[in-house]
Structures are given as structure tokens and as C-alpha cells.
Length: 204
Image (cartoon, rainbow, N blue to C red):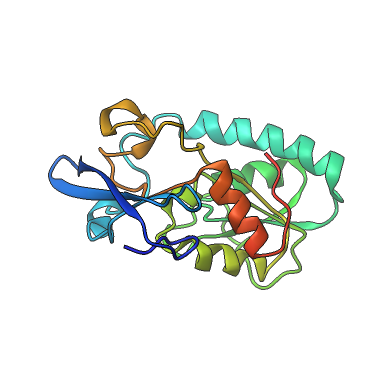
């Protein structure tokens, strides 16, 4: 199986049970240290609800991200610019940022916008994108990142870094085996590879 980041051959790493019923193979790339699942045939079932049952911290997480993002935008960017939450889910984060006073817009082709109606992205000039806890969901990460970079070259994101040594299936909660939505796992090396490929800088 080819690596979805650098296109080199991957090695079978382990098999794990996803959604409590599907035996799924995981493959690791020695070249860029990226871990991926086999082609994720189970995603329709995994996304039958856009908010998975395991996501018990969704409100607190969005409030926390809004506080951190506010500080970041005040320090590094123009507070009067337009910003976009890519993969914005229900629109909660966009709503929080607009309530703080930022010109924030929402985009997510897979989830209904519940909290930020009227503020959908419509080719506005965007200074920076936020995309929290979405990279691990990307089936074709290089294509998704390329789409974002066509909007702006500033992407502020969160994901859990793949530990070393690579944990077994029962040793790392971030595999998300019970909800089946996490299919891509990044190391610092794989994120640096992505940055170099697109000729941008990566900071962590």
C-alpha cells in the first residue's frame, strides 16, 4: 500500500477491530513516519452521526480552542481580517469566534451548520484557516491540505502526534477504534514532509 503522504511503499503494522466488528489493517511509512488505515470502507457507518458518541468533551474543547485562537489572532494576525473554520462541524467554534468579535466563517461539506447559519464560506478573502481535530479524519490528506492552501497559506490545526514507538491498538485512545473516524496519524516528520512538499513552514 502506498503512503498517502509521500507515496512510498508502506509496511503492515497491525490489525485492529474498528466499530467493534471490522478487522482493519494499519500501515506505516518508514520514509515519512506516517500511519494510515487500509482504504476506509466503513466510513459511511462511522459518520452516520456527525458527532460521535465518544465525543463527550466537544463543548469544553471548542471553548478552549476559541480562547487559544483569540490570543493567536491578536498576536500574529490582523483582528479585522476574515477567518475560516474548515471542517467546522456544527458551527459551534465559528459561533464562539464571532461572538468574541472576529469575522469568522464556516465550511464543512459533511455536517449541518447549526450554530453559524448565514456565515458560510463563499469565497471570501481569508487570512487564516483553523481546522481543529480534522487532519486525522482525512482520507486523502494531501488533497485536503491542498484545498485549504488554495484559500490561504496560513493553516492553524490540531491533531495528536503519533507516539514513538508506535502504540499497539489497545495502548492509544486516539486510534478511535470505537467510532472509526480516525484514519490518518501524523508524526512530526510526516508533518514536516507535508510542509516541505507545499513549500510552507511548519511550527509546533
